[in-house]
View 1 (cartoon, rainbow, N blue to C red):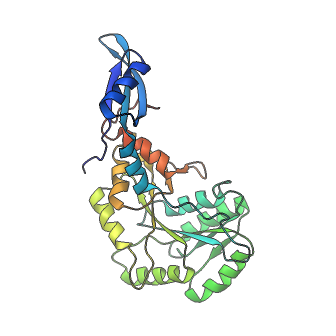
View 2 (cartoon, rainbow, N blue to C red; view 1 turned 90 degrees about the horizontal axis):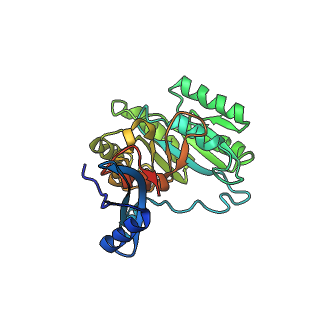
View 3 (tube, helix red, strand yellow; view 1 turned 90 degrees about the vertical axis):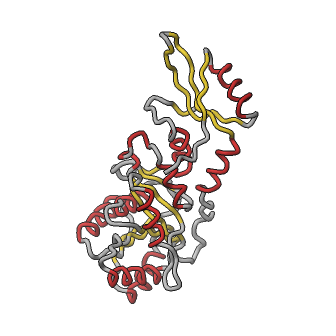
Length: 285
């Protein structure tokens, strides 16, 4: 997978001189992405990684999601629904818990959890435990006929609803059709495709196609890369995100709930700036 990164390195005795050289080379709109101190022949030097801000703006525009509505829920309306979809093992259930229980993710809005992944008992128990610990509402829906009643209860108790779904298996088309129909009955406002950041780009693109909207079903509206901590120096993760061509509201970078949840675009821009170099000691500028 070719890197989209146009960043260049510049070295010098001090940061001011290095930044001036980067500006002369790349233009007045240059942005310093990362800095570090190195030794060249025993002499300490400053090295920066820089790129034109126009290039950074183009990447940002492709990854930036539309702002969440403010207020996120109008009084009397149903909760704002964010569904997580993706392959087995992508980390959807843990991510759902992070989104629902982390204070401040949606401002002062109250979070809630709903699962339609009734095929994994462990997944339901995991979400139920997090919901109990955080004192937030939790519902399990087995059938489309149960959706209205569950949504009515949740409307009274939460403002934002995070929906967990089963992992998609190409070998179980009937089960896939069933849960996607159930998700359509919930009618989420956003559908985030959760993919491990270590996934090969060709596989990610194939999975992305499988979760596109069809005449019968809603499709993915956002990308959520998970497990960034499992990618050495996060090399290539932004190129992976760009290949899916979906906005990225969040990423996850560990198993801790709710700590390992971060805004997507700032993190991916930092990773993008290092994609061509991948040294471990760069520091954000």
